[in-house]
Image (tube, rainbow, N blue to C red; front, side, top):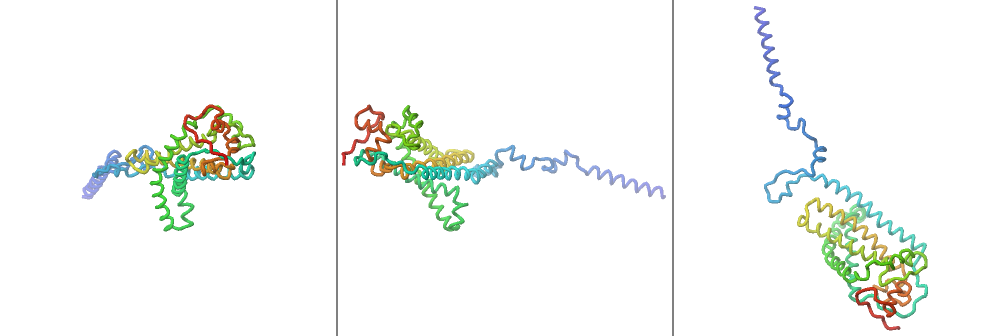
Length: 335
């Protein structure tokens, strides 16, 4: 009997062990039961896929995108790199102009004022210029608020004031983009004939354009520096307008990836555009004597025209053949 009892115990233990072995899943079966046993982790998934997307039953299929990893890179650029680029470009330009003003000062008329003036820009030209310039300044301020407002302005004025200001700035940024775009188009059409680069511009650049030193190289209606500003306005303004409308009307022209690229182009071109216009404003105001009068009253002193645009003055006086293919403003009567 003892041997029978021992046999029964051994048999029971053997059956229990066999059942445990049968109950233990194989590695392949474990993977079927536990889908995450050897599945890729989140980092691998983000590296291999451009987005994590599921299925939705509503018409808007864009709602099926749960996560777009490229958006993280875009956010990092917008919050970090863009601020360095914009701050470096704008503050760098201001620093260069400050040093230049302290060392060179205002570029004065060497011959003084003659007391006689000549019409440089018509009323329509000045209207287009100031319309575009006014829109640009408001667009620049409201646009810089998007990038720099939260870290710089918010701590100074508080959440409520910053929210109110940002809302109105957004309205201005959107609606003033239309007259700005029209202005850029009109500037392109009005002055394209006089802004084609030529050999005179090369000589003007080599001689410092009258800004560096006291030499006054000859120039037609627009010198090389003004032609640079013209093309910056036309190309830069065209880029910020085109990319801005992509962002203003989301998903009509491009998907989310295209809008992220449009925002990068828009913001980088915009801050460089602002830096260039700061230099333009400097030259047109405190940088050069008599320059503001060209867009202020539309007339400039004859000595100013002779020192900075001698070839253009010769054209107006009828001593040389015309360089521009468009009608030029007539010479004003002597005072």
